[in-house]
Length: 279
Ligand code: MF3
Ligand code: CO
Ligand code: CO
View 1 (cartoon, rainbow, N blue to C red):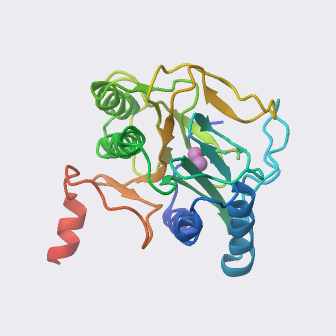
View 2: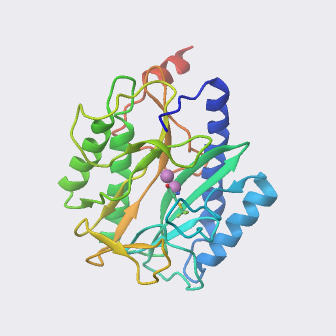
């Protein structure tokens, strides 16, 4: 397999799928409070996809070779869970942080995005980890333009996260996406500038750094469900995910919606946006 470049119809398909994935998160946001279980979140999302969006969950039944089929319509990773947490009947409690990762399929195209949610009041340390991880993702996004390289993205994320005293998980990465859930290339969240694949217009991939408050090492979760991953030192972990199109002049974030958190102030307004605004 190799990188797929999306044409105008593919880009439109990915815009729609990306917005729908983000809108599932918008819909879930007011429900994510102390007392709700992650299974209830899963059910709300599943019903919304089916009844409101007529979209399909890409995670339900997803099982690459060597994996058991994933049993739920989204992933919920709580506190020291790094990723791929499977929803269950345990209520969220005040002070928890939870990543909700939604991937929908619409007209064959995949939309993949995740956000962190603070459950009630959280510690300053937990809030800082979520904020730094959000900013780390945007430091990566800002590097996307034709001619840049994947290593530029990873380097930007790693240097920012490590400067804040946090660590970058190495075992999971962003990915190309389109008619398939996981396509080439792999998008590492660490690395050296000027290395790896050159970015070209029409590429679509996710940037989805997993950042740990402690050491970067991970292990399988105690559930032994074949999916859940936790930090080895039990420290908190956070993740955000956007799906990015490489445009002729820079990038377009495909997973924005009315409820997306604001873009950090350090992100420059893009040339393309400025051209649109002045036209
Ligand atoms: N949404 C995840 C990603 O960003 C993948 C989840 S696969 C699952 O790539 F099977 F765990 F749901
Ligand atoms: Co992804
Ligand atoms: Co995802």
